[in-house]
Length: 274
Image (spheres, one colour):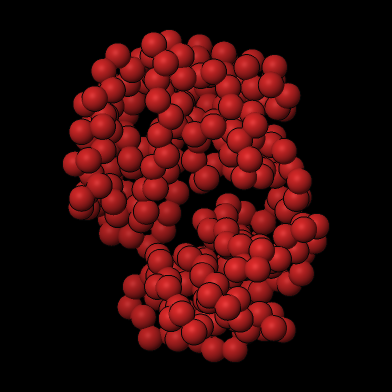
């Protein structure tokens, strides 16, 4: 059989405890996937140079987030790994032109185990991850045949690299393109490891050149949103740090709204007039 590929937006890590409308729907999808013998997951929370394939026989549950209630950190998803399939996946990726290596120690990040808690709640289906290459474009030209033989391929891969962005600034949680298509804004855990400030990078969409580095936010970047006219970039922050507004005419910070008790996970759309 050929198994389906599924894209799932898991939203906040709190989705693991608060199923809302999506949780029951994912459970129904999981129940319809009879005969699935393994799940391959590509999550943006594991980004690497080249491609790495998780080969652990018993991948740990990674709680790769901060600032949430303690019960979330107690959750475990003890699904077995699939070392043999991981080796096969790495071989297929190499044949397709990717620089792919096995990682026998990597566990499952929350981009994998949170939705899988609803798809396969008994954690009985083997799971392994393939990392997301940091240099990647939106065209899907390198999809492998891992959807065969009862294996579930959640996301296809590509590495055309028409635009090369910087690779060493931490995991991105959001990437936004300006309305005119000229600027790429990226943020997330970027810059956090070395100064606990959080950083937004603004790139030229045509060349990949770094145009401006915005930092000093004192928090992880939660969400980015351009105004419809491209004049403003709103930056939502974790840790109750609120919102920051950047004037894109000179790429400078113009305003802050810090009266927030919780982290910002999604910035609401601007009014049409900006």
